[in-house]
Length: 405
Image (cartoon, rainbow, N blue to C red; front, side):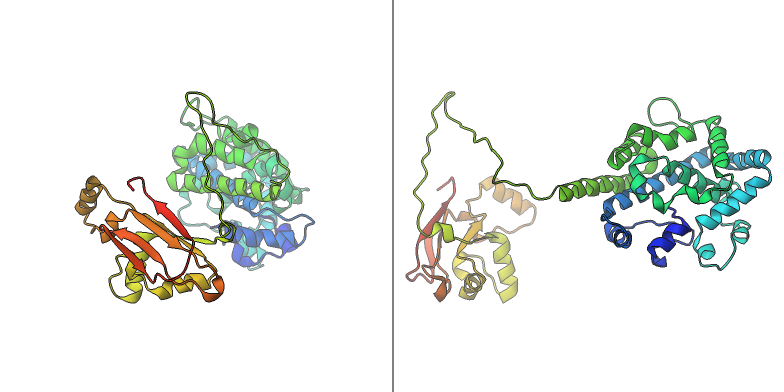
């Protein structure tokens, strides 16, 4: 994304945001947020970092498509520049210089060299573009003009406002450039007829003029095979950022005043009856911690540097620690009797079967008062024998059973 000199001065962007050629490319949302914060400080409404991130992606996508076009039709940019020079005469160089001053690479922006000197240099690996940095500047003129025609990014137009080119032949320059490419061979879009470069640039805007997400989707669907898998993933991530931003802007939902429909499941082939057990006085005060049993026992084994493979081997201090943190109940996940097929699968994969495989029931004991802390009461039937740890006077009891119980 190439920004104007005026916008860089207005928002006082740190130069770290910019590549040597003057482009801004956001590697992640953090850099987009930092850029957006600079703009928000001088605006009445906050600037969306996800919008800026997606605008940068659009610019990158156009550059990839243009490179593909140039590689397919070698020398086409050189012919375009020659046609412009023949038509515009001296206005060609004046417009190119004016554009480089208003949308400068960093060396020109910092005053290290003039736009004229910069345009006389050549960059390596630019042969397909025809004339080095001059061809790159012509390409940027095309993309800046296209961005100014995009209603979806109008709120951020001050970043690349082409009115800074007033007084030059910029309009005539870009109009004739588009006319030239309209007469050139097109690029296939996977399906359907080939499209000219002018049609490629306008395609996303015409398909979804007011939606950045819609434009990304259009480019991804039509040109994803050219953009490649890695960049396509970035486009999908950009769409996700836009959707998340919409959710944040909508704010919290008032669930108290929303009428909800409660379904009934009676009738049909059978009658359904509610058979809930009555609530106990401790239930509203329950603060439950869920633990994946196998994982937890493995973590404890490593922590205490000894095998902890059954519930009665869990140290009391671990349960005291949970109680100190405000938890009043423990839900142990994964306690069931594994099938023989499951056991064989685990063994074939090289995983040892812990002795917990035959646990059928667990019960968790809650302390009657938290002031005294939670002493560990965990009872289970392990391998057919009852195991109880530190059973004292705590209650009530929550039974958790499996289908095989």
